[in-house]
Image 1 (spheres, rainbow, N blue to C red):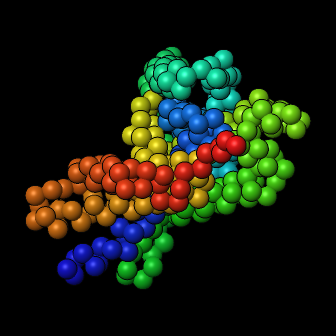
Image 2: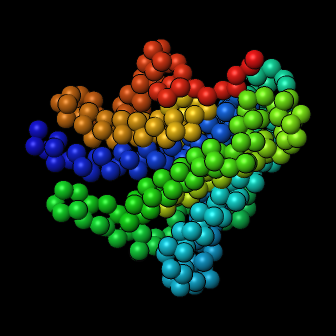
Length: 321
């Protein structure tokens, strides 16, 4: 019991970091579903593109000898901005090529298209990196400043990069909520989500708003990719598969289409994984270990779908009059 209590603060911090990461990725699923009722399964690869943009910038700066000359906080802003821009533009391109021509088709058709785009992007990343670097398993160069550990007495300690992940995630989630709920652009997004035909009659450019929605969702995924790379270092073309599935689970847990729900679902899932990975072995006498954390995560999803299929905070979709 004493060991379990001693581990609690550190496990809590680890769960929050993981949860905010899932929440950022889940926003991409939630934004697109809220407007088009489409599950964009290519979003996990859009997340990976952000991670690769970050590592390529860092490797380029290191090769040029400039990495040590840039302030670390300015560096992380540069990486996140570049990752958001690249992933956001890629998401817009995916929408234009793979989804817009299928708009109005049965839901299964764009879903199959999304799966196809996911596989295409995986292999495209692998091909490009193989030609460029003759390798597609890349490691983020270490930045000493990010590895500074902040000690909170003898209770727990946390690295500066982990705090950056938490602060950046909270900041982006708050900004996105304000944009959607307090701006003219956000009103247009909500109007298109409510009724595309009526929104068009009111002078809203539906195609532009949908592209903007994909850009915002992709940008959140790109930011998550950069932060993931900074936090965990190793990235490859398949890195996004498991986090993408977990983030989709988080979006469903919170209520698909619900922005605060994406955050809540991500935090619940992250905390559940962290606590199960740390305490499951202790509670079962070693019979079950950290490898069973995924079973618990998806078991929670099944329970939520059975007893509350609209998610913890409720599903947000268009209401038809």
